[in-house]
Length: 101
Image (tube, rainbow, N blue to C red):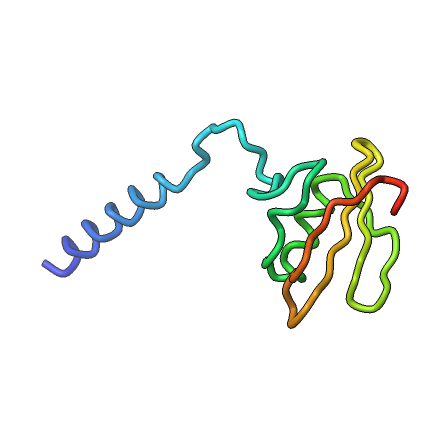
């Protein structure tokens, strides 16, 4: 009896895990779910450590930092962002003219 229960549990587990495979959608795994290559304003409120990789994956490079304020630039789009960090989160994200970077 116990082996039948374990067999059923195992089969259900395999079925559930099989459903976790890739859905074949068109969104790339490395693309963040917020922001774009020309606008980072949706990152406001995000945790700084986690969001940094997302910003980089959108093509932005850190240009300079002044205290808790960082300037990010995307060479492809010419977009410039000033991001201020407070208590580990992006408290202010402002898109600036490219010359400000």
